[in-house]
Amino acid sequence: MKASASYLKGLDYSVVQQCMHCGLCLPTCPTYDATKLERHSPRGRISLMRAIADGRLETGPVFGEEMYYCLGCLACTSACPAGVNYAELFEHARAEVERLDLLNHLRRRLIRGFTVTWLFMDLRRLRAMGRLMRFYQWIGLQTLLRRSGVLRLLPKRLQELEAMTPSVQGKYTHEWLPEILPARGERRHRVVLLSGCAQDLIFSDVNRDTAEVLSANGCEVVTPRGQQCCGSLHAHNGELELARQLARRNIDQIPPDRFDAIITNAGGCGSHLKHYGRLLADDPGYRERARLWDQKVKDIHEWLAAIGLRPPKTNGAPPLVVTYHESCHLSHGQRVVDQPRALLRAIPNLRLVELPESLWCCGSAGIYNLTQPEMANRLLERKLKHIRSTGATVVATANTGCHLQLINGARQAGLGVRVVHPMTLLAEAYRAEH
Image (cartoon, rainbow, N blue to C red; front, top):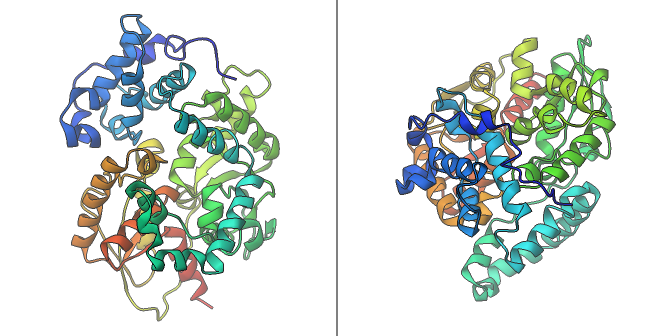
């Protein structure tokens, strides 16, 4: 049920007031860089939010469209000298858009109702849909339709969406992994691995690789059955109440006091998972457990760097030239920047080549590439140009959306690179030891 009070007017006013309008965020904002329009900048958007919080501006469709034109990449937060909490402002602004139904389109309501408020609120439904997609792809119907030319009869946008359809893995995470994977050698830590939602459908092998890497580094890995979505999709799309429901379910299923760490390998999910304390700050039944949860959630790179990675042994594997694209929410949201590079450099026969503008968004941004395809494609083309310039044969990235965006983009551009998660490269190096 939608909240009756204004999300923006209900914010601690000091959060809205933080922005000094200095403009240091402007060169870091992809939408401002592309359009040079003030309203498409963090500073311009915060001015709109403040005017609404002050009662000087009425909300309307233009405000709603502007809030959803923002990528939410959080590059502005890294550049901001005043420490503006743009993530909180951004989420509350979108929640206000949804509360007032400012973007009142029937198609939009139907799509959001099916996906955000139904499909992703219970991962049993998502996995059931995944099985249907898997069958559709396995029997060759998708390939047949693509080769037949029938899809060219569809509107251009539907053709583009069909081309982005991900390949569903042959197994889900719980089919790859036992519920408890013992540590290889002496057990030093007991951790829980979050399998994610989209990650579980299309990159469950990354979860398997992550668990194997953790095991090789002295961690007993627990992968609970029946996990739920972390709620980042909901919080980033204005459904804060649904995000709170999912946060409570996750805390109930994974009591944070029973594990040394709660491990996530997806940058966007991790950025949200580390803020359950803020999300549930007004819930006396969950407030303290949510704060402990925040302390226990660790990105996989962050955790391995903290406990000390065991470098894979040198083997006869052929040399790899790898470049690294940074997930916006891993770097700007979680401030995990150096650790992925250090882990990659620990792999024998791997040469890491820096990617120009590695911090620049690839255009995925959650579901931004679905809702704002023109801007998303501009950003993707820019990213692919830089990847091509490195001469790398492998692109490493640590977020589900970025991973899929780069796979699709490289395929369509004819760029022959392999896109992988850093944990996959580490897991392959450990397997080569035997």
